[in-house]
View (tube, rainbow, N blue to C red):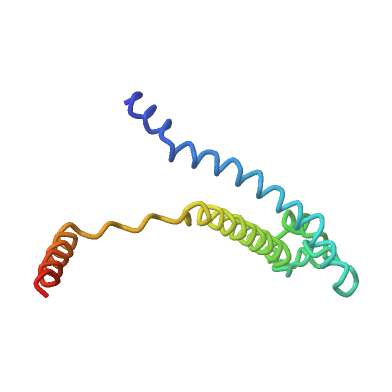
Length: 145
């Protein structure tokens, strides 16, 4: 069983997947920082009052009457944090778009390598024989004339 696991773990697909997961986790942290530290403050500054977008929530509990910050509100009672959800959705959209651009670029690079002019395929053997027979018959007819 250990030998089978070693074969599985050392296959190219498993290693590629592991590398993809590690790079994806690092990329996700970069995008989260981009959204949380750069994009959302700009959106918050554009909104009336310059509120912190991550603190947008709807109180679902009467304990939240004094409107604390969302992180504190979650500890006190039930709160519907739509600002945090919108931030997470924006993270997803940016990551999906960046991956789309990356995969599109890779596909274009691979397509350029594959576009090398290929030699025309040789005609099937029976067509070559028929052409030879045609040429022989044409020469015979030409000799008689």
